[in-house]
Image (cartoon, rainbow, N blue to C red; front, side, top):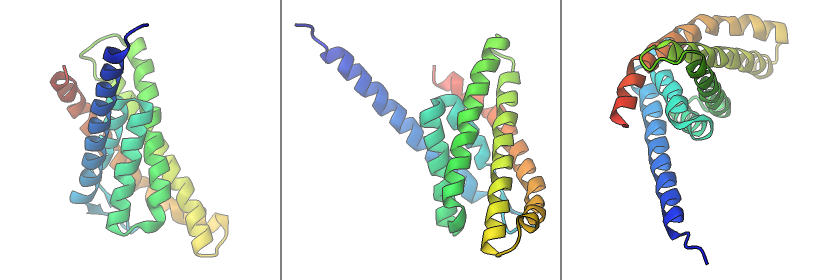
Length: 188
C-alpha cells in the first residue's frame, strides 16, 4: 500500500497558506477601500482598494484571487452602508481579479521579461475595464429600477459614474504596478 500522508500534508499546508494569503488580501482590499475615500459627485468614492483587487488576482490566481477581491470589496460596501451595491460589487470585483489574472498570464507568455511591468499594466487596464463596464451596467439597471424610470434615463444617469470609476481604475493599475514586484520579491 502506498503512503500518501506526506503529499496530503503538503497539499493541506499549501491550501492553508493560500487561504491565509487570500484572507489577508481580502482584508487589505476592504481596508484599502474604506480608509482613503475621495468623494465623487455621484455619492460614491474613489479609493486605492482596486490596487489590492488586481493584486489578489495576480498573486492568488483566478479563483482565490477573485474570492479575495470580491469578498474584501463587498465587505467594504457592507460596512460602509452601500448595501444595494454589495452583490454587484462582489461579482464585479471578483471578475476584475479573474480577468486581470488571465490577461497577466497571457502577457507573461508574450513578454518574457521578469522586469518588464507591461504585463501588470495591461492586465490591470483590462481588469479595470471590466470594473468600469460592470458598474456602468449595474447602475443603469439600478437607477432605472430603483427610480422607476426608463432604461434610457438610467443610462444617462449612470454615465456620471464613468469618469470617477476610470480614475479609480487608473489608481488601481498604478498601485498594483508598484506593489507587484515588491510582493513577488518578498514571496521568494
